Amino acid sequence: MNATHAQRRRERLDRGLKVRSEGIYALMSWRELVYLTLPRLILIAGLLILPFLMPTAYWQRVISIVCIYALLALSFDFLAHFVGLVSLGGAFFIGTGGYLTAILNTSFGLPPLLTIPIATVFGAVICTLLLLPCLPLRGVYFAIVTLMYPLLLMRVIEALDILGGTDGIVGIDSFANRWIEQYFIICMVLLFLFGMRRVVNQDLGLVLRAVKDNDQAVRASGISITYYKTIAVFISSAMGCLAGAYLVHLYMWAGLSTFALDFSILPIAATVIGGAGTLVGPVLGAFILVPISELLREFGTLRIVFYAIILLAFIVFRSEGIMVYGQRKYHQFEKWTKV
Amino acid sequence: MSSTKPPLLQVNQVTKTFGGIFALNDVSFDLHEGEILGIIGPNGSGKTTLVNCITGFIEMTAGEVLYRGKKISGKAPHKIADMGITRTFQIMRPYYSLPAYKNLVIPLFSPRAKRTGGWRGGGKLGDRNTVSIDILEELGFERESFVPYKKASNLPTGYLKRMELARCLALNPKIILCDEVFSGLSMSEIASMVPLVERLQMEGITLIMIEHRLRELFRVANRIMVLNFGEKLIEGTAEEVMADERVKEAYFGSQEVEEVMAHA
Image (cartoon, rainbow over all chains, first blue to last red):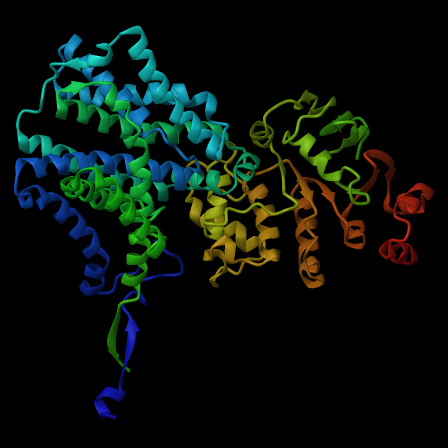
C-alpha cells in the first residue's frame, strides 16, 4: 500500500451539494456549479448546433419533425406523470392546432408570426373545452376519450366535406427561410422543456402532482381538482397545438393525416424509452426514436420489424428509461478526496 | 355551553343506504362551537360513512347537514372544506411522492388558506415552505432533523397520522372530523397526541373524533355518541354512555370496555 494512497478516499461528487432534500443545493465552488449545470448546458448547446451537423436538407427536416414529437412527448409526460391523466390526445392536439392554423392562414391571410400563437392559445381552448366533460374520468377511460376525438373529427371532415375534405387545405405559407423554420421549433422545445420543469416544482405543479398522488386528499384540502386538471390539460394541449400549427406551416398543407395515430403513439414510446416523469427523457426519447425510424427506411417493409425489436430491447433492458438511469449514474460519480 | 347559541353544525336525520343496507339510519346530532364530540361504535357501525356524508365525499340518501344554519349537504367536498369543515382520512392519504413539508404546501395553496391567512400564516404573502415546516414542528416533526424533508412514502405511520391532522390545520379550520387519528399508533405516540388535541380545542377548533381508543377519547371528549348498525344508540357523557345497557350489548366481549368501565 502506497502511503499517499491510503490518505485518500473516494467521495461522491454530489455529496455536500444536496441539502436535505432534492431540489435544494448548496454550491461551494465553481466545480460544483459546473457539475450541476453541465448536463443542462450540453443539452442546450447540443440542440442549438444540431441543425449545423445535419448533412442534408432532408435531415434538417427530420430534426423539425423530431422537435414536433418532442413537444408531444413532453405534453404526454406532463399529463401522465405529473397530473395522472393518461392522454392519447397527440393526434387530437396536432389536428386542432393544424386545422386552426390553416384556416387562419388561408381564409384570413394572417402570417405565421400570428397564426402560430393564435392557434396555440385558441386550439388549446378548444381542446380543453372538448375534454372538459371527461376530466372526472381517470386512467384508461380518459385515454380512450382522447383517442376517440381525432377519429371523430377526421370522419366529420371527411363525411361533411368541410375544410377541404379529403384533399385538405393547401396553399399555406411556409416560413421565411430554413433557419427560422429550424430554430423556431428548437427554441420552443427548449422553452417548454425548462418552463415545464419549473412549473412542476412551483406550488401550482405541486398541486397537480398531488392530484396524481391522491385526488381525494386534494379535495379534502379545499381545492377543486377539476379546476386544476383543466389548467393542466390546457398547458398540455397548448404544447400539442403549437406543434400542430408548426407542422402545418412546415408541410404547407393541412389534411386528414394531421389526425394520424402516430402523433398519439410515438410520444408514449419516446416517454418509455427516455424515462417517464423526467420531462427531459421524453424529449431525448423523441430524438432517438424518430431518426431511427428514418434510418430504417432503407429496409422498406421490414422497417417496422426492426423498429419493434429496438423498442422491445429498450423496454426489456432499460425499462426505467435512459434519463432515469443516466441521472442515477451521474449522481454516483466519485472523486478522490484527501482525508 | 349556552343553550341559546345555535349549534355550529346540525346533522338532521341523515340516512345513507348502499343497495338495501342502511349504513346510516336517521342519525341526528348537534355540534356546538368549541366542544369535542366523540363518536364510537363497533366495526361497520357507520362512523366513517357519517364523516363521508358530512364532508360531502359521498352523497347522503336522505337528511341534511347545516353549518351555522346554512345547508351544506349536497355541496362538493372541496366547497365544504373551503368553509372550514375539514377531515382526516382513516386510511392515510398523503402525497407519497412529495416530501413531508411539500405535502402541506397543497392545503396552504388552497383558496381558503389564501383567504383566511392559514392557521399559522402562509396565506397570500407568506412563504408556504416555511409555514409548512412551522406547522409540522407544532405537530411533532423535529425541525432540525431530516424528517420534514423526507418523502412521505418513507415516513412511518405515526408521522403520517400527524400529517393528516396537519393538512386539516393548514386550512385554518373551524371543525375537524378526525377519523381514527389514534389508531395504529403506539401508546407513547398516543400519549403525545392527546395534549395536541386539547390544545386545538383551546384554540377554538371544534372536533369530532371517531375513535376505538376509548380511554384516550374519554379523556378529551366533552360528549360521546354511540353508533351501532347505522343507528344512533345514545348520546351523553362518557359515564352515561358506558352505563347504558345497549352500549354494553353492542360492545359485548370487548375487553377494553370492561377495562374502561372498571376504571370509571
